[in-house]
Amino acid sequence: MRDAEGFLARAGDLDVYAADAVLELRGLHRGTEIRRALEGWSGDQGGARVEIHRALVSASDDSLVDDWERVVDGRLESKGIEYWRFNPDGQVYEHRIYGHRAVQPGPSLRDRVRLALAHPAAGLALLRRRRSD
Image (cartoon, rainbow, N blue to C red):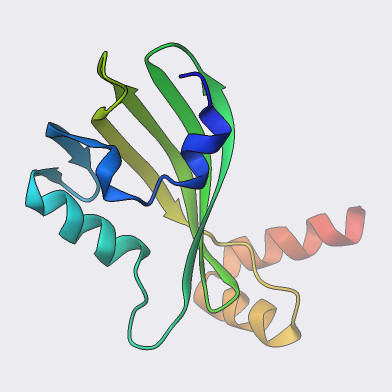
């Protein structure tokens, strides 16, 4: 991969995939399924604005790894890691996206209270950590 940062800047473009590509994102997808899966993950949902932020972790001649964050209406919703494998023509033939919900509360008191009510142990641990920092 010669221009990994450039690739990540246009990673949402569907023309980067080879005809026989496979995407792993909440299941395996091929062909036209790739478009639907990616649009469901990165597209606007019910009027909410969705942004995917990526940061390069590693790149070689035929692969790329990045950290990603999915931000919905300005709030971090989930994050993870993804890797891309490229064929000799530079097209993606394998793309796997792994992630989890972002459980760190936002800066507002409301966000911290919501976390504490939904996940008491995690909320208490975060409160203790913030007080010790």
